[in-house]
Image 1 (tube, one colour):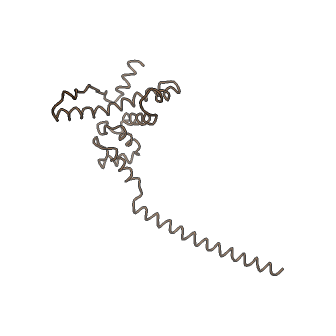
Image 2 (cartoon, rainbow, N blue to C red):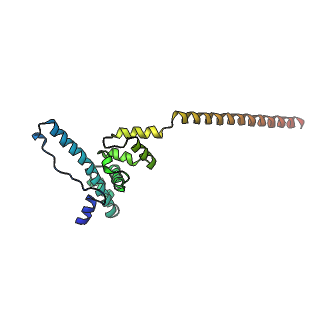
Image 3 (cartoon, rainbow, N blue to C red):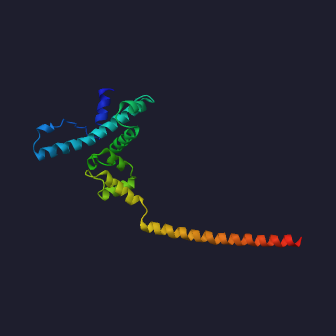
Length: 194
């Protein structure tokens, strides 16, 4: 990989380069404010880290020979193919510019859940304030359950539709049974005549 390739991965067009600066030694921190500042900084940098990992994975998949990427993930990395795919999905999503990185949470799994929303669902989640930096994975899961689960009104409409279809089918079944009975009766009449 050339230095130019590395620069492209670290800071693709439209994306800020990750900071990834060393944290202060926790043994040397005494004040609450200082702990909070370091924790917030590490939390913010965690998003940059998983985006960087996703970018490296995407570049590796694009540039390694067939089979090498899968072998690398299976043998050389501390996570599964599923995790690799999620990290690449998040990186591609962020790089697409559909949502600005500063509106997203710092947890990779929460960001991945956002990528599983349709364009319309993402617009609704943004409008409702579900997608925000402080969101949790549970927030997006609850949102998905709420909008994807049929409402009570829809369930009642479906129930009425199914009941009407059942009644129609029972009526038709009764008509068929009567017709069969009539045929059976006509058949018996013919057999007694002979």
